[in-house]
Image (spheres, rainbow, N blue to C red):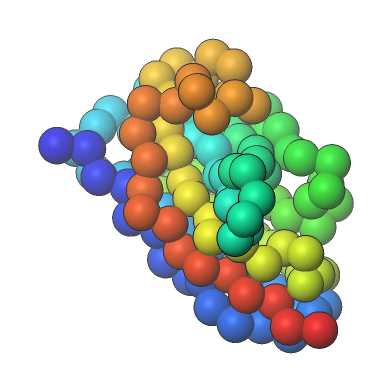
Length: 124
């Protein structure tokens, strides 16, 4: 049974930082591209960042480029999202997701497994 468990969310002031983690189990982690998505209340979910299974490429939404960094440790079956210079508009529930062999990593529809999410709230 595949499980993705996010952690690291919380309340932070604007300009602060948080690091989200997503621990995977029940899957061959190294064969999956991993992504982060977010959804704010009343809004559609949006792509945030993704990293290929080979750890060679990463993609970011324009809104987070230069502030967020995705990384993964295949030995620990964990993907991270380092979020710096946080803004109130980053407030959302953040979800990690896995897509086998990582095709179309920008599209939520491509992902096979999802975590339950972790809340990030940025105060102004």
